[in-house]
Image 1 (tube, rainbow, N blue to C red):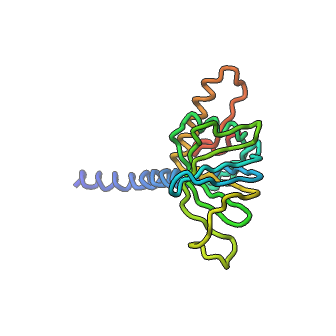
Image 2 (tube, rainbow, N blue to C red):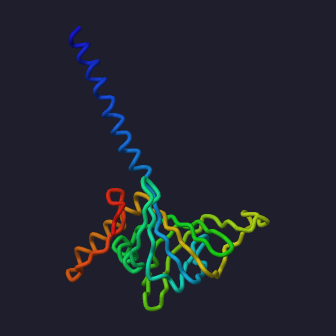
Length: 197
């Protein structure tokens, strides 16, 4: 009988630990955010079925990052740093929403094989797989919305999912460790460090 009471007590004591563990796992799942890249103009050039070269022109020198969950916070890093981190993980892809003045386009982005970012020219180039195009005009059926070949005033919201954040963080570490003269190391937010400065 004492053994049965011991097991009952053990189960009762273990329940709060299970809830804390589940809550901790839930926090990992609910962490989310975006990198926000802005540009003056851009274009899609078809390379293959649903695969395009996306070129952004007059790209902002700085990329804003926003963490939505678990706490709302934001910061900036240079666009050059973000792309440099990504370059250390060339196989990395990201889901993104590109918004123009007339539509939003859901894409999967990978860095272009050639130089992806030219800070002097202000151009940023991706290989983009287009998933869908949605027109802002309610009179246009989304099924008939055309992918714009050229557009003005574009914002790209790059989703910080777990795989992308892990890759960008690994790229950041590799770059910071490989740059001996770098005294002010740039960082990027992660679930363990939402308040990166």
